[in-house]
Length: 341
Image 1: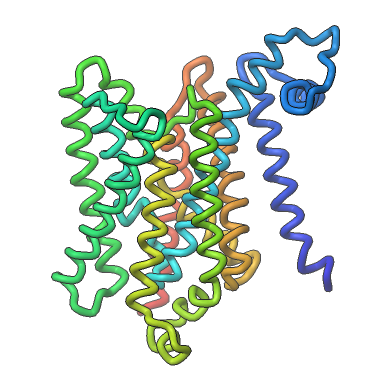
Image 2 (image 1 turned 180 degrees about the vertical axis):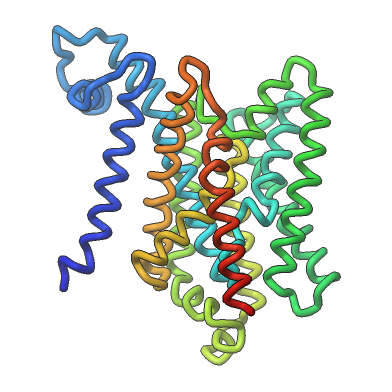
């Protein structure tokens, strides 16, 4: 029984490690797993540099490829954990930071900083802007939904979020065209990319992810109850409205930070939680961390595809996730509609 229950978890963790190693190894010049682990030992653990390995190989592995792959995994983990939480809070399998417009709001904040050239917080300026505008977008979605639908139906807030997302994307496109030389940099945020990121970006996303996912885990029982409806949660002594608002704020913080460094990458925050629930069940003490693992793995695989399919040029990561996510979104939508009839 123990092995049967934990075997899927072990498989998911193994796949995550394999995807990270492949992500580091695959590139313009392929690097073997042995060289990767040797470079990690040399750079981070003080191991002796082998005579047949140039120091440039160590630098490429630890300063260029590793930060990119680690950030891809952290971003996928952050978005997927947020997706798992918001789907339960709103009781809607189509709900996610992307469909609620939070990702687009964070991207607008990052684009505004790039276009204006703000650097008042140094390397944290992008993260701060993404966080602020993600929260503003979430507050706007909640405010509009409250005015339109007094019952605050989950489908209404999802549709409101999607409308806001389209509107914000249009504004970002206009801003990008007016930004002149910074057009390409803003456009990269619109379609998602992990290129050119360093360890400082990974550190910021990692710290925020750990804190927010820890909060989700602490609230896992409340998420379990809220997935059954507000009446069930209220009967157990939980304030559904207050809990929903608090968890939506946490989702906005986590999403805003991740998107500020990676750009808008959709659908992973909807796909991973759906897969995890089918494999691991509905308990959020398992769903949240495993959504992070599966989402991180999925994002690394998509990043590998983005780098290799059209090499030496590179596809936006958001394009790859959309190719997989759009059909999945349609499948979930029509299945939900058929079940409700």
